[in-house]
Amino acid sequence: MDISPETPQSTDRAEGLREFVGVMSGMETAFVALIDFYAKNGGPSHEAVAKHLQATADQLPKNVPLSTRRVLEHIADGVMGNTPRKGA
Image 1 (spheres, rainbow, N blue to C red):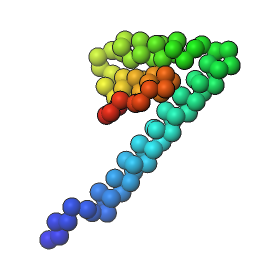
Image 2 (cartoon, helix red, strand yellow; image 1 turned 90 degrees about the horizontal axis):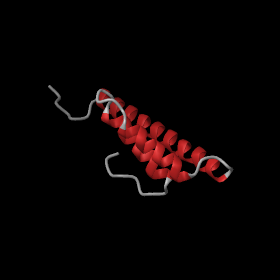
Image 3 (cartoon, rainbow, N blue to C red; image 1 turned 90 degrees about the vertical axis):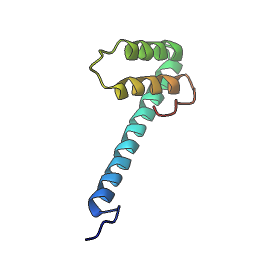
């Protein structure tokens, strides 16, 4: 019986997870870029958008996954030019 830690299925899952994380990171970058564009062209300020995102995260119902709150906070950090939080 082969008990190797890496099977074709685990490799496929790991690759799928890396791809998913890449897509989410790309979407987050796109949101920050769009917010930046509108803030520089007469839209709400970076600070106003970041505050709105943080307020939205703070007001999410308890049954919403913590990861949703972290994504909003991470985007707010990006909008303000902050270094994203570790683990967010």
